[in-house]
Amino acid sequence: MVIAGGDQLRRFLRGGGDLLASVQVLRMSTNTHTRTASRAVVLALTRGAAWSVVALVWTGPAAAQTGGAFTPEQASAGRGVYELACARCHMADLGGAFEAPALAGPNFAREWATRPASDLIAYIQASMPPGQGRSLSAAAYASLAAYLRQVNGSAAVTVGGVSTVASPPTQTERPSADASATSTFREIDPFVPVSDATLHDPDPGDWLMYRRTYDGWGYSPLDQITRDNVHQLSLAWVWAMPDGTNEPTPLVRDGVLYLANPGNVIQALEADTGTLLWEYRRPLPEALRTGFNRNLAIFEEKLYLASIDAYLVALDARTGSVVWETWIADYQQGYTNSAGPLVVEGIVINGINECSRFQPDSCFITGHDARTGEELWRTLTIAEPGTPVGDTWGDLSLTLRGGGDSWITGSYDPELGLVYSQP
Ligand code: HEC
Image (cartoon, rainbow, N blue to C red; front, side, top):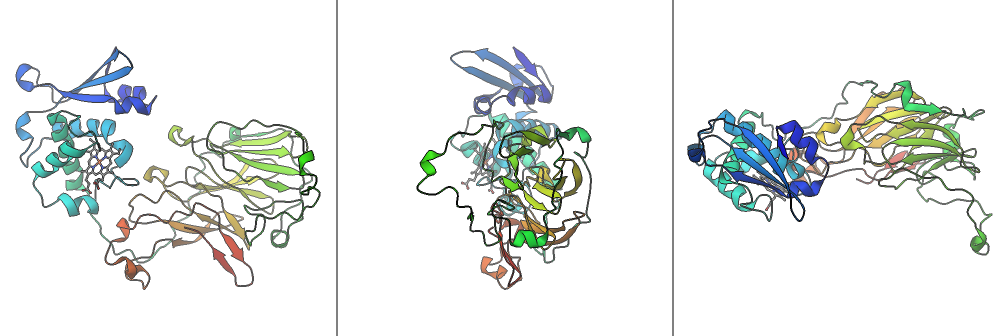
């Protein structure tokens, strides 16, 4: 089987991460080939003990390997190799993730801008991918270096200096407002709206926020089940949830259970029978469908979902239909939500996730008007340079101060008017 071309290749590789690890890029010497094609990727798939993929990469003339110069064709071939062998750690946009540093912008410039290209080639050839140095051809490594240098040559580099955090204009694009995202089987009627007073003092049978009450105790005052009779519990019903990471805390309001399934599938179930009342399936890009969400929030007649694609979505708690949705951050930059929001005095408070990457705008918590979704404020969870606490980071630019994800919902002290978050 022969596969040629980037799209076809990516489609093929998407099937399994293991295949990626078995990609070998072999150098075809330009001397033995009269072909002058600057870039051709041909994959031969053979079936041995296991499937293996062999990629043959022709790059430009070998002469440009160690000198400062590189051709656009070489950089373009490097991009193809990068997507195959490097992007899963350093990310497609070279932004870096976890321990793999950013390969564009200030991090790269600091290390490599003043060193000769041969150093960069030697480094990635000896050590990248980690533990698999020299697993690619010399030409492939040279093309990778060309690609990295091309990107960095044209990248605008901004270091530090971020001092204020203004909320971006509220964007209410509605990718999922499409009615087909919701199936309403039985409207919840009557539905008693959840007031602010109710959130402060919930009915014993309700569970209206992540840890039930603002103090975060996670304690139910119900006393029907005790230490003495717990062994008599028996199965009432079973509800199958979709595959994926499952960490939800369902909410309960007046006998209806609101469940956050993996992949942002939100369901309202009759708690005593397990009957599905409505279901909302958020249309998500394919790469995000394995994501999940730990909890929802409820206020008045709306249910709030902090979505995997970094939106805040308000659903009508009675029908599951979308009331509004507000853009919080760009999921293509790696931002996502895994915890859910907390509603305090009519403000939906939500912390964004996936900030182990290096970004100029750091990680943050936003507050939104519960009725409209409008963003009211945005606070960074990593101290900025030039602030008293920020100076404990020395002179490290904000871009390099990764971390600060709010991956657990916070709590609230109504007497002090303080929200506690856990970045
Ligand atoms: C399995 C994850 C992984 C893969 C795949 C990977 N890298 Fe890395 N890369 C890392 C890690 C982790 C580091 C940091 C190493 C260290 O600090 O010793 C790193 C460091 C680097 C650096 C140095 C960055 C700096 O700030 O100085 C470069 C350049 C680099 N990688 C290029 C590549 C290229 C090109 C590829 C593809 C051939 C690649 N890497 C594939 C994880 C990876």
